[in-house]
Length: 214
Image 1 (cartoon, rainbow, N blue to C red):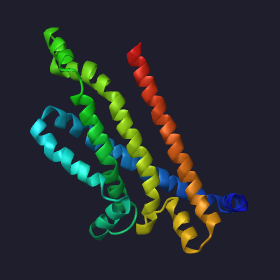
Image 2: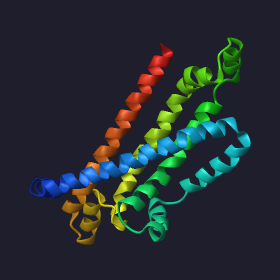
Image 3: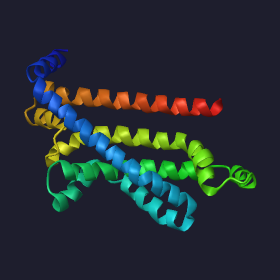
């Protein structure tokens, strides 16, 4: 309990530094998440339509899932150096597999009879995509986004190892100095952010699936 109280007082006494770390952490996490969504949702849609291409891409993405987060950061280090950019690239790579795979599954699991019925009604390919395929695939895409978001927020703490900043700086410094109060200054907000983003995405998923039931 005393450790938590000391962490609280540290935040009060170093409020500006703490706020800057939170801002960097959020900027890094959400930038990586948005980039991965922009890249992987269209790519997942393409993979769902082209089976031969999907085998190569999905297998490649699955192989990325077994690589530890810190290893990805170290791999990009010799190429991009230290700082915000390599951390962003590494986190984007980390976020891609769950979004791509869930987007692929979301489109692949749509009942083919539904698509055939839409064709029979005279709907164009674009109308089918917008009015049928995307709404049916969205719940699984949101699940992929939720998984990616939680992983990215947690893994963004490792960005401090390559000068990316964020809340991980407090964790690394706390471990280095055996100062558990300082460690909690970084660890508790990260845990709260992960829980918050989980709640937000779960709410989105329930809203979408509730709308579909209606």
